[in-house]
Figure (cartoon, rainbow, N blue to C red):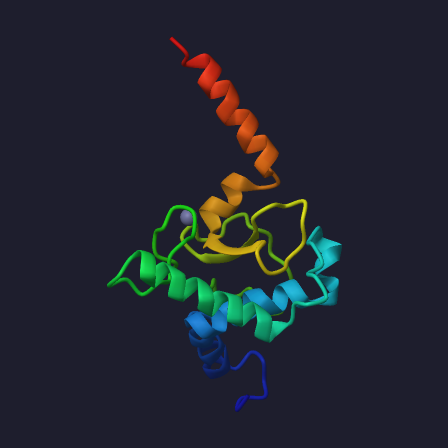
Length: 157
Ligand SMILES: [Zn+2]
């Protein structure tokens, strides 16, 4: 970093621009998952097979798959609602640790475990918007089947 004083306005601006780029934003999300302190905030420790490179590789695969599904798009789409990701950071959150999902921008990129009973690893890591991640929370595939089963019973004629 060129500006040593962390309160230097130029440095703050530079950090902010970087965090708002896809590379900065996704890198920060990945680092957050790999931080040893992540578990303290109720996070889930990723599988041993997961490091930064592997997270990035899975994200690149996600982009390729979504591009195939939606030719002409950038592939930066939520796997669930299939709407475009944003990578918008909030100013003034630097160095303050995990902020929680509250107040986050709903269209922002996030990393999800498809089945929350399983940790972060290949075939369980998906990339979705904050909104979908929030809606899903800790519900798991068995819960979803239950919801659908009852729906079928309710609307049976
Ligand atoms: Zn979504």
